[in-house]
Picture 1 (cartoon, rainbow, N blue to C red):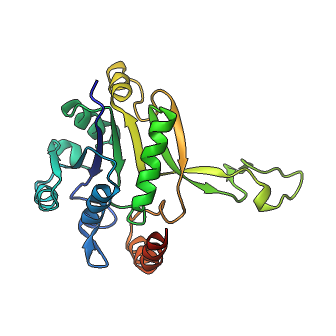
Picture 2 (spheres, one colour):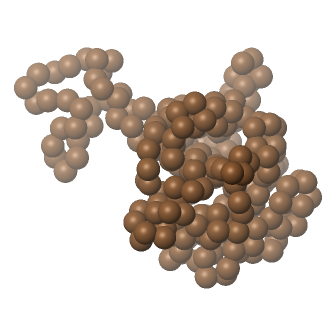
Length: 228
């Protein structure tokens, strides 16, 4: 059995809300480049791959000393799902596990990546989801989720809601592809675990305002990372 751990950084050239967002710069460094460098610096992956339909990302990957997987152009449009392009990647690359690290989560730190990969191994999960704990009253379609209308509870006493972040996600290759072959949902196949990350690590860039927020807090994130 191949015991390799792969990092896979997905990057589409097109985007609906923020044009070419993977190439947008944060403190002078493109988001895609930041993700590559963090994956390399983490030192927990046997290989780091950029996965895109556009060859321009291949040039970036090679310039950073990592590998490039060019998916079919049809898997780079707005209709293509993550299940489709993750499956296509895994069909071409033998490994034990793959970790999808999103370039649009630029406040995810090297320490976050190391902690997540360690949790995947320790729990022997088939799928591991990153989440942001939300410890405040939450409702769904007007009905309480983690509180009751019968009494007012202090927020710190509430059960935290696990908001899936997708900043980083891990899958066991064999379980994922088995689900694909069976025609079932591969994203949540097998034993599914949940790993907490901070509010900042869970922040993703989808709009111009999201990018401005990341620019504002990046110095704090870098300072805290240096102190850790």
